[in-house]
Image (cartoon, rainbow, N blue to C red):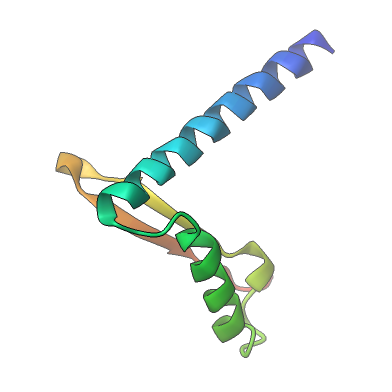
Length: 80
């Protein structure tokens, strides 16, 4: 039980760090704070026309890559 609570705290801490990193990346790029949510809504709208895709599991992220470059990462999984 205590181990579960510690794991949850670490998980929450990691998620908060990831979100803060995204917010900072948005600010550096001049993107609105709700950029990811709007982009996901648009992707769900477009890809829901195709039954092959699992639009409930679409993920969008800004990832820091080598040499300080950042990239927009989008995952649109196929249905199983």
